[in-house]
Image 1 (cartoon, rainbow, N blue to C red):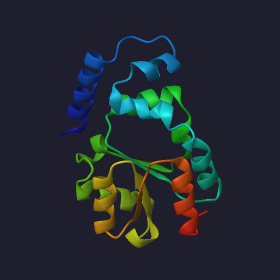
Image 2 (image 1 turned 135 degrees about the vertical axis):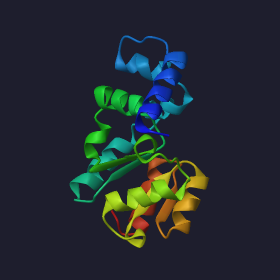
Image 3 (image 1 turned 180 degrees about the vertical axis):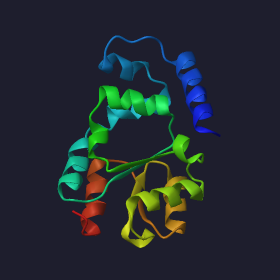
Image 4 (image 1 turned 30 degrees about the horizontal axis):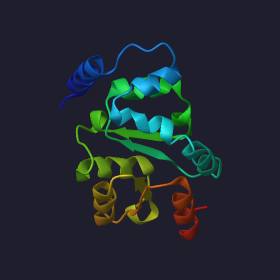
Amino acid sequence: MAHGAWRTHGNRLLQRTVPPCRTATESLRCLPRSGRHLRTQRPIVPLLQQLHDAGLRLVLLSNTSITHIEFIERNFHVLKYMHQRVTSFSVGAMKPDHRIFKAALEAAQCPPEECFYTDDIEAYTSEARKLGIQSHTFTTVDLLTDRLRDLKIL
């Protein structure tokens, strides 16, 4: 799907599912299920900051639309910790398609075995492992932190 088509598709989805909201906090309650994780995963922000401040290259890998990314940029600061963004709308492929993982590896600028990937969907972390990427299925920030410590990343 071309970039413009992804944007149009994303805009149509948001127009159909998200009622008008007055504030960023209210917008979180208005987001469809796919956007609600923004509110519940805020505890991950200090971990992202810690990884960023340690000099690790962080790459966002997301099945999302440009409209969603622009919303996050306007209302939250989490993306400032990311060195690069690899999105389904920019690549033209969605996780678990290997093409989006290959694009993420290019953005990470290192071989798969030197990368770490986390996601809350097992099918995505499984696909990453098939490509040689160390991965972890996210459930809580504490368990993710433990995994990063086990791998000597933290």
